[in-house]
Length: 260
Image 1 (cartoon, rainbow, N blue to C red):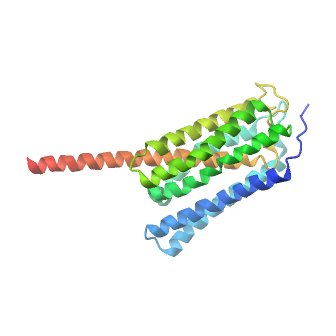
Image 2: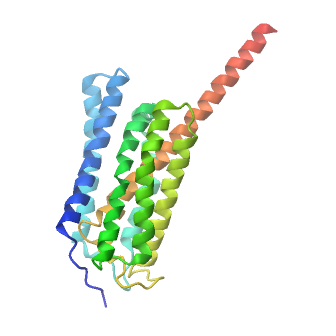
Image 3: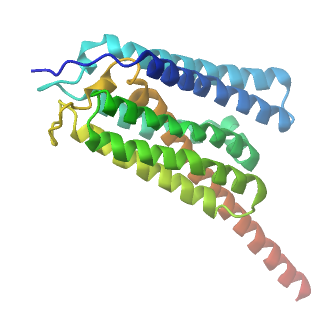
C-alpha cells in the first residue's frame, strides 16, 4: 500500500520554488555578461542568454509537470522513472555543455565560472530536509546526512569562488566540486534506497515526498543542475591546467632551442 504524502509547508514550497526560479534566471544572466566581456555583440549575447533561458524554463516546467504524471509517483511495484530521468540528465547535461562550443569558450574564463558557482551557495536549501524530518515527511536516514552535507557544501562554496577569483591554483575549486559531487552521491543514494519503488532500506516515512510538488524540483531540476555545474567546473579547470602546462612546456622548449 502506498504511503500518503503529507502536505509540504507553504514556507518550504515558497523557498524551494524561489531558489529554482533564481537558478533558472542566474545562468542566462551570467553567460550574457560573460559574452559581453568577451567582446561579443549585444545581439549575439542576447541570443545566447535567450537560448539558455528557454532551455532552463522548459526544464523547470517539465520538472513541475512530473507531479501530474502518475508513472513518476513512487510506490511498490512501480518503475522508478524519476531515478532513470535523474541519471539521464547528469550524463547528457555535461556532454551537451561541452559540445556547445560558444558556451564552452566562455566557461574557460575563471571569472565566469566563479560567478556561476556563486549559485551553489544556495545548497543551504538542504536545511528544508530537517524541517520535513521534524514534520514527519522525511526519514532521518536521508534527512540528516543530506541536510548537513548540503549546508557544508553551500557554506564552503564561497571559498571556491574566492579561490577562482584570487588564486592561480585550481586545486581548491576542483576539490570542492568533488566534495559537492560526493555529497550528492550520498544524498541520492539514501533517497533512492529509501523510496517505495526500490525499498532496499525500509523507512517510515519513505522518501516519496520527492515525487510530489515542490520537492520533485530537487531530483528533477536542482540536483542535476548542480551536478552538471560541478562536472563542468572540474572539466574546464583541468583543461585550463593542461593548456597552461602545454604552453609552459612550449615556451621552455622554444627558449632552449633559441639558446642552443
